[in-house]
Amino acid sequence: MNFNDNTSLVLQSLDALILALSEEKTERFNAIIHSVELSIDDFKKYSSWSNDCYTRNCIIDNDKFELILICWCEGHQTPIHDHGGEECWVKVIEGEFKETIYKKDEVGELISVKSSISKANEVTYMKDFMGFHRLENIANKRSMSLHLYAKPIRNCNIFDEHSKTFVNKNMFYDTTA
Image (cartoon, rainbow, N blue to C red):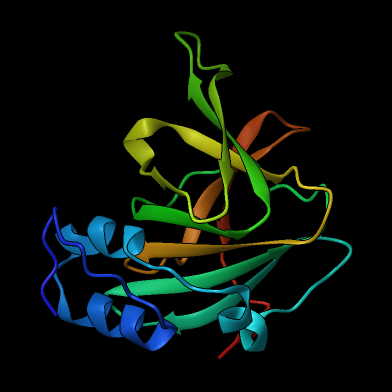
């Protein structure tokens, strides 16, 4: 498989996606994740749900990248967080998400600088130099998003709403394939 920025190749299975990510350079991940056309059925065996919080379900984790299916119930949201220095692409599988970007102002206070809505098959991108972000399921139903990290994220900084400071958190999976 050979991906370049103007390829019309469409990946239609998780196996094809994993193979492309394994064979191509990280610089091609953006083109690859945009080329994926998968159905909700492709993710059924990876999905797990909790009414309390979104779940992080590992599809694959290796030294080069990590693919996680996040399953969200209505109203679930992440804390404001960074990505431990790694690149992150989020592809909406089902539902609708609000992403809010935050930055620190001149006195170190966290302020919202941008919000956007993503729907099925749309892709967002985040890297730490862009700020911090929060994702929220704004659909009136369960939703799923596929997260691609260029190198796995083992820990990240999460904003503690009570202390108004960032704390380092070790990441974990709710399920692994």
